[in-house]
Length: 47
Length: 225
Image (cartoon, rainbow over all chains, first blue to last red; front, top):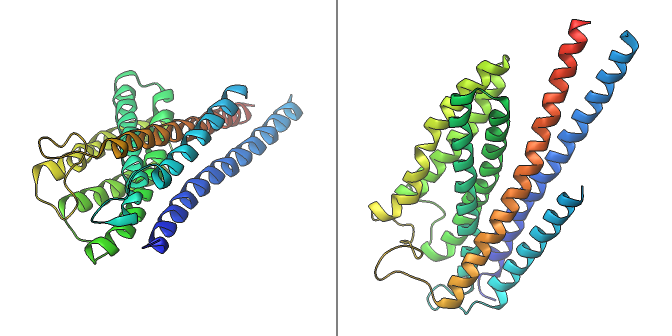
């Protein structure tokens, strides 16, 4: 297929951006959940 | 959980079908050949990105009016998702342009206004990192978001108002424009698939804002103890 490299690159880079963004959302959510657990346990200890 | 799984599966189905149709269903474009197939990914991502920026604009207006943090959270989520889609547009555009135009980039109205739009929404996100106080951050970024949105109609109409290196509109472009019927159907299907992906990413990103709100609330409680 003519220009196969360009088509492949466009789809590969495009989907890499989407997956990268999706993974970053998951990573940030895990960090926030860990913060919530930590804050909850420190609040319980303070009571 | 079940709703998220259903939305994820429906989106995956739509996106895979759109990609399959853009390679195996649409006929070969006569002058550009196979490289034209990038159009279904590129233009559909552009439409989804602009819809996300419109949602951001709408939330910014609602925040200024109601001062409810919910609108701030939804606004920043839409800005981030719109930025992801616009990044795809700015990557796939030059990849298409190089074999067709012989150049990767030119500073014409469409390309420049799209690049400016991308920079404006990066500035919107950067601005938020500079302000600590939540209400002040929400208000200033909402005002900046309203200003940033002024560029979005300019991006859309640039190929209608000025002669550009970028192709003239093939959808809603007036007399003499248009797509071959199968191409048109696949294009609108791709737009639908990208909008489903935009909604999925937006809902996931908004969940993050809710978690952040919970963290802020717990921090306030810890400080009050």
